[in-house]
Image 1 (cartoon, rainbow, N blue to C red):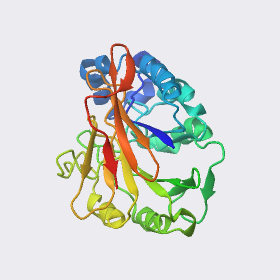
Image 2: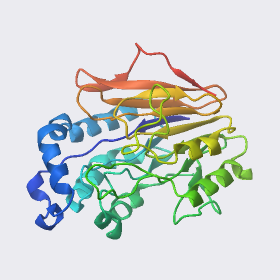
Image 3: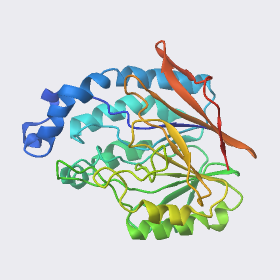
Image 4: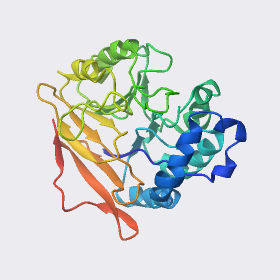
Length: 301
């Protein structure tokens, strides 16, 4: 099975499309940051996502996994635009799977109005996957799917609203960590290679934890649950740099897709899942996505 991992696409909309009432909040600062820095770097996000769908076809991708941050400020017009831009990627044979990022649940109104659920839930799932019941402990999450006889996917939600302008951290509820442990040990998934997906990074590229204001608050608790899970990897985003890291004493490899659409370092991973599994980086170059042949594949243990 071949799985395309992307993240942090931050599909832009004109700021005038965002209702005036949404600006009386942290979004005013976020909008200024968008105008000055983020906007120019993601101006081509829609074009790149269309090209990514072509690349997925060329690479015979079976399933697509996105680890969040479809939007910039989590507003209704952004969710509409992001869902339309991502839709071509949702038709792979084994389907499309996603979790929200912190920008998708930017403030409480995004959660209250169920924006991610309304716009992306109808696209999540695939053809032929088996939904593993009995592992959710916190609303929908964790969610577990068996994509075929040898590959499974488990999604955990780590994003939450951060009304404070200086904070963009995340946390996985304790109940979800308990559910993740249950899912990893579920009889239906034994013998499968297991992909665990969430938004936040438990570790940076050099093995350090992310900062308190930006990182996953209970990263160590997540790694403890994953510690002994062989034939498993963790897929995430949030940090806009593609990398793979192995944490001492933790069996799964951590794979960060970075930002798939940000100018200067767009890309992600293609996972080749078989008895000997590996992750192959892809990049944006010369107006298209292509495999990064200058970088070595990452073995997945």
